Length: 104
Image (cartoon, rainbow, N blue to C red; front, side):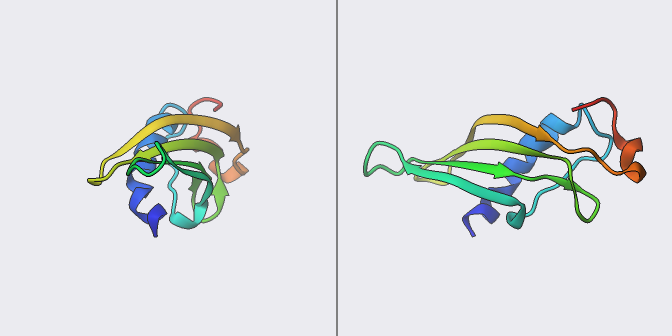
């Protein structure tokens, strides 16, 4: 459920990255995000840092890459993307080659 609330923030970062490389922006759903780490910052404070790996895709099942995203959430609903890192690219099938602007 937590991931569902954060998907819009992650999607915005993914759009910013992939718009340079693809004409069709990939999407994510909560099931395409893996939680790597969750830490409470400062001991017993309200700042929580999450590290996730997102697996965005185009079409029904064509994963385009793996992306590490570090997110901080605060006490009053604040959400901040601390870091975005593209880790790995996957080759798209022949029928989706036309959406590639340049290699990513």
